Length: 277
Ligand code: SF4
Ligand code: SF4
Ligand code: FES
Image (cartoon, rainbow, N blue to C red):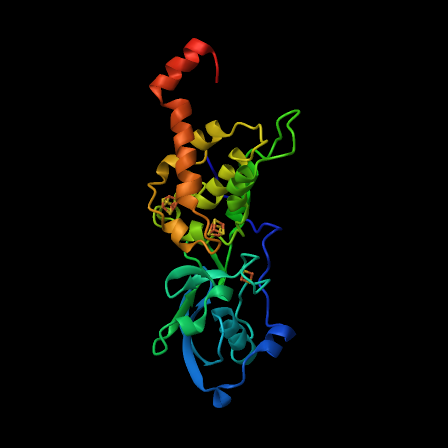
């Protein structure tokens, strides 16, 4: 069983206040802007909160994170937001933009309807710390329970390109947790104590499909990851900013491996006769 421990992990990036660089990169005040947009941003904490309206001047190419930085610099210096790279690579700036989990630094404002406000809320599945910052430390507790990479003794560190490509897809994960946020098993049913979630099934798949890994994680997958709770809705795949085919390439193959090992009667008979695993 998987238990949650509400604690901030040391790996988790911290909430940041407006920085000089953010202020320097901010677009000009509303008066000089050709166009403005209203952002409805969640302000509050785990106990109480509301959406507050901010009118933001828009420049070509701006993303939601730019607008949030503008708000920090010009209207609400205490607005809490977590970010790091502004290049869709650190996974820190996940939020719900117009109701959908997304990286704020990858959400272009000019791709949104010009006459409607943009809502920005923290990820719903995890406890709010302040404003747009959530406590995602539960993930790091799950991660610690996954048996790590263990090369087969004597394995040659030379692989076919196809084997590299297969494992490489899973290593693109930036741990933004958008998939965890959207998954109904965690979001609606709140089964964090039973289900590791798509991000960690991706990690397990990457280890299981590594060409020279020798660890056997299938019992962990069957008994401790909660993989049976996934009903392959593919919502996780739809929101992944790294375009990882979470359901088709990670979860379904893991489910098939569990079935082959533990529930296939023909395989069971074959193993009993041959004595092979
Ligand atoms: S496919 Fe499975 S893991 Fe992905 S969102 Fe649906 S239930 Fe969750
Ligand atoms: S699998 Fe995709 S959506 Fe999930 S944490 Fe990794 S990058 Fe984010
Ligand atoms: S700031 Fe790094 S992913 Fe958005």
